[in-house]
Length: 114
Image 1 (cartoon, rainbow, N blue to C red):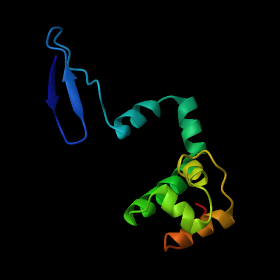
Image 2 (image 1 turned 90 degrees about the vertical axis):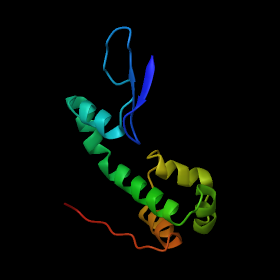
Image 3 (image 1 turned 30 degrees about the vertical axis):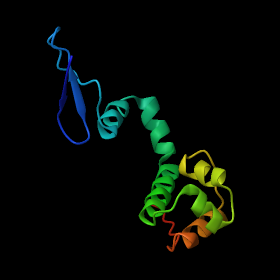
Image 4 (image 1 turned 90 degrees about the horizontal axis):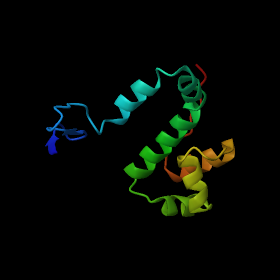
């Protein structure tokens, strides 16, 4: 096997013996595009969009502030596990909890319906 670095985010492995040019690794966006073709997956993805957006926003703000989950938890006066659950979309955070996280990150919580 020969490993070729195609871009910064994607490594493609070519099987020279079989002449295959099928990537063994691909980006999240490529995987998501393929999975969204499945109606069952697409429905589940849409249903979890709010949790995903909350998780993504918290992670981005936390990393921009160079805080660990433990450091953020201390500021919020909660456990690292509670922050992990929210970031991992495994929790069901209250509005009050999200406000505390926003305050600890020096930002405002904004909710909208569309």
